[in-house]
Length: 227
Image (cartoon, rainbow, N blue to C red; front, side, top):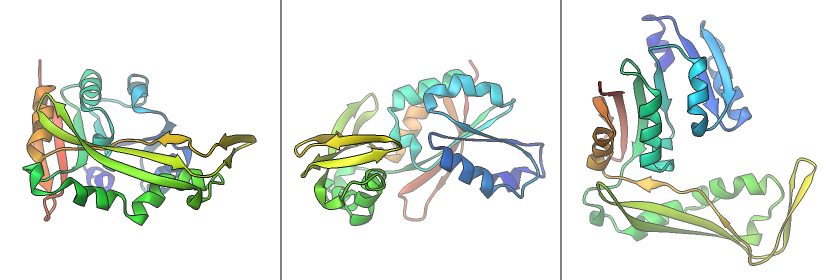
């Protein structure tokens, strides 16, 4: 949708980046019928300094799919600020925590993240490699964490292996023993004011914001403030 809106205004070069080669292929296939230069790259956020060679200014850096909440905010925004120019744009989405957070109990949020669909999402990479879902238990807690902008919340997720299991990864075999624990990724939960506060603190200027009708999801367009 973004690319189709920009096509009439400028000449585009689309660079799809993900840690999964399959997702990069999917991203390129999605825009196969759009006449523009396209590049697909398998990389991590930590590779951003190297990725700059693949784009020209001005750039629109999109971090979508709630990825903003899946990084340490200080590291993420410092990295982006160091790599973007003032003419570049930064677009990201964020799932919000109600303000004040106490208006929604932690148990309510934990119940959502422990839903069968979300549990399946978390263990699916292991299931695809041979783990029986009945051989593990999924745990999640929503824990308060103090930040420079007040209290935020962060999920803590892990799998407890209940029965000896063997996974296949290409030609390799990985053994899991009963009692093993596998730590999973985390997600920060911010309030609306905390998100904008972080942007301002790390030298970004808010250009436009779009809030979902239920107030739970924020889409924000920002740029780097001039020095």
